[in-house]
Amino acid sequence: MTDTSDLTASLRSIGVATADEEPRYEPLTGGVSSEIWRVDLRRGPICVKRPLPKLRVATDWFAPVERSQYEVRWLRLAREIIPDSVPKVLGFDPLLHVIAMTYLNPSTHRQWKTDLREGRVDHAIAAAVGDRLARVHAATSGRADVEEAFPPNDIFYKIRLEPYFEEAARRHSDVASLLHALVAKTIGVRRALVHGDVSPKNIMIGPAGPIFLDAEAACYGEPAFDLAFCLTHLLLKCLWTPASTPEFLRSFDTLGANYLRGVTWESRWSLEARAAALLPGILLARIDGKSPVEYVTEESQRSHARKVARALLIEHPRRLADIRVVWSQDLPLG
Image (cartoon, rainbow, N blue to C red):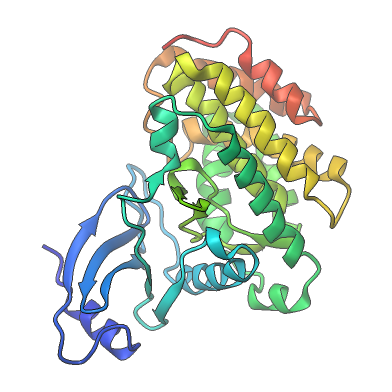
């Protein structure tokens, strides 16, 4: 059992818990990068999160715990833009890196990933994810105050680019230069507020639609990364639940189209081209990076993802629809 006395002291110090109450802690599962609890207080249940310095994966993967401050900044800024789609931060302890936020009750909120696993594909959810993600990017692009709040640092590199692209490059030497080029290009873009981990496991579906969680990789950077990251997971779900492949591919199109309609800060074609360049790198990384998706278990499935990702890295398509077409060819049934 984890000693939670320091958490209790933290919650009291930031005014979330009163001095005379003893919170009750229930560990929540699902993440590799943080400790997360449901905490019962007199005011009701809340969610408490603390980042881990070493992530729970098979290989060594370290990330600065200071990323918590940028997650809090993302949550607060994004909540100003899409208030129904971001949990409220109730308090933050920058010394212990403890974040207290609203608790999303499972009786009224469900994980998007679970829906997709069970073949419940609601294209309205995909449309809303694309629309709301674009709204965050549009509202923060070109804002000097937001860029200043997310100064250049190595957190995004350590939690995303190195364990994804560079680890995949170590395993695929023939496309390593292409993956290293993606890293260099992505680091060089500072255009909007980026979540950094937009995947179905980090999106809850509530009464008002999608809610974005776990912005530990937040930075001011390349908005195309968020789009490509989420779309990659819709492709991979075809390997997890093959019977729903046509619906996953339709959601891929729907999410992409709704996002691109909201691109007002630059050319839609330019952003789509960068997303199309990033997507195969992310696809390969989710198979052979430090954090491979746990549900792609058959060698035929992994081989398909590798083959498509490597081919697309070399061919460099500029349109998302072209990626979807190549992916859908010769998909294994599981």
